[in-house]
Amino acid sequence: MIQHALNEGLLLLRQRAGVSTVLALALAVPIALAGVGMAVNRWLGPVAELSARESSVAVLLHPHLDREMRQRWVTAQSTVHPEWTITEVSPEELVQRLRQWFPYLEDLVGTGDASMPPLIEVATADPDSLKALNDQPEVLAVGPQSSIQQLLGEVARRLSWVVVALSAVLLAAAVLLAVVWIHLELYRHADELTIMRLVGATEGTIRGPFVVAVGVSGVAAGVIAVFGSLVAAQGLSQMVTVLGLPEVVVTPWMVSIQLAAAVILPVAAAAFTLGRHASEEFDE
Amino acid sequence: MIRLRGVSKDFEGRFILRSLDLQVEAGEFIFLTGPSGAGKTTLLRLLYAAERPTEGEVWVAGRRVDQLHRRRLPLLRRKVGVIFQDFKLLRRKTVLENITFVLRIHGVAPRESNRRAQQVLKRLGLQHRQSALPDALSGGEQQRVAIARALAYQPRLILADEPTGNLDADLASELLSLLCDINYQGATVLVATHDHAILESIPARALVLHQGRIHYDGMWPP
Image (cartoon, rainbow over all chains, first blue to last red; front, side, top):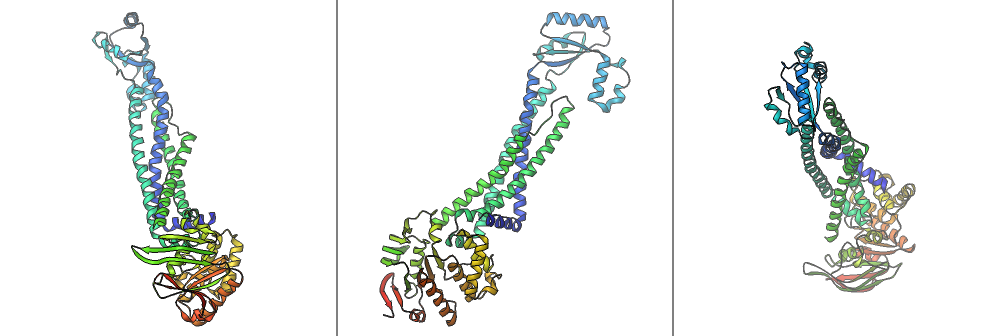
């Protein structure tokens, strides 16, 4: 009867190509989103680790300070704040960094390192403690106390929750679509199913084609979802690696979960619907 | 083969069958007759468990079917060949597929089910129509396909509900001799009909139903 289920299931898919395509896409979108959510959550681990460590805050000093004055100021700060690690960034290194981060500003940074203000970096676990530097006459500006990693991490964490919630809602809608489709097909094939029952067909034989049709849609949805999440992860990776952060990776276990969810959820919904239909048929 | 004990069936308070007691031995050929609305079809439906009695016990092939779990129903129905009054053919399947499908359900291998289906179609003169869909057939041809389907898996009990209703006299007589052949081979045959010509064509036990009760149980003609 497996042959019967396959033949009839594929026939049902051909007859209802539109509905099965919509179902596959409706399943694929939330599963792809969930895949991206999983990848981002996994990526947040190392990022959170980075941001939990010391943050590095940039401090611009007045250009009129010469090397000796700067050294004196750094020593004084190190004595007052032994928990700070102060590093002086040479103008050459600053130019190099700017070139790396903002290649499109080549003309600006290419004017020479003489125009670069003296910059120091202060690594500390308590970035708020640097606020007091704003009051010192030697200091021109203190960079943002939140690191880019922290900001990114926070945004990504919130986004991943939104993605998870959105994919759950969309997935529920897709499963509902599968249930409605099966209901309509059962209604359409009601006479046929009654005859099959009367000539001794088991529920497995009767349900097989519907399960195959929904299952094939699920497999297609799984493949689309995996492809979509891989593309999205690659796009995200390109954005974050520029900032020196690790890549967003879709791991094999995420792919497995996506494929399993794409097949199991609609098939389970179909099996449940078919089971209920059989009970109602029998009660009548 | 069939045993009914105090079987009653009512629909929304209206009694269709009342306190029926009946015993049918394996290998019997029985006519079930009576006017329209006497309860013939309902009695057959009770036997293949399409209905449950309001009260009483229904036994078929050693199983109490009125209490049979729905998971067990297919097993019962595979022992019973039913020829339905309205044929109940699968519209999307060809004549041949309608028969091979049932054989496949019964676990017959594809090649063997094809061979057996061809054989039974040949016997019923439908070999040339094997690729046709049911809607392309005449009423008589559809009736014969329904019969072919019921006979194909050689069931132990055949229930026929007005099997000659759509056949001309010659085909009706041919069908009856076919059912007799099957009966000679050991199957129990129960034919529901209100056609007196059929009833009188062969001497057999007859049950006459009237207003839901067995009015007569004996050889026909009396």
